[in-house]
Image 1 (cartoon, rainbow, N blue to C red):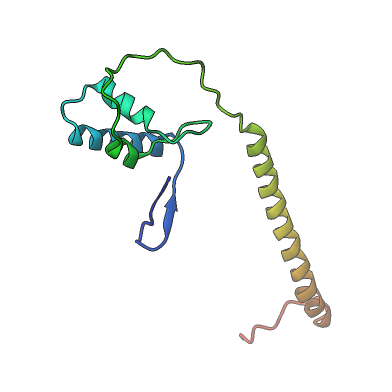
Image 2 (image 1 turned 45 degrees about the horizontal axis):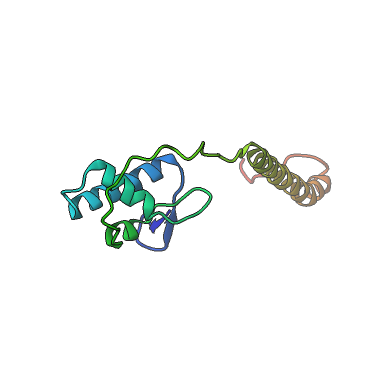
Length: 135
């Protein structure tokens, strides 16, 4: 879901069950305010029939409020089948490996930089601590 940024500059991208629940509840409240005589089943029908078609349908608040649906009575529908949810475990493992790779790579680069800068200075001082000028 895309919304306004927290400080008003740019966009905020949100995802997950909590964002979806809030978005659905807000849209249902808007539909209920615009059509106060609709039953809960009619509101559910309006939200599901105006959703953007995809593998997992996406709620379209604008379409839910503005679409003119037929006058046919709303009948409760049985579920068409189980909803399949993609297994993201392998993607999560890949992301974890990438994060570990970046962290280890950064540590390696910092170690090389330290060796390039600190070791020649320490060698020039004869491996003695630096003189801080305090006596």
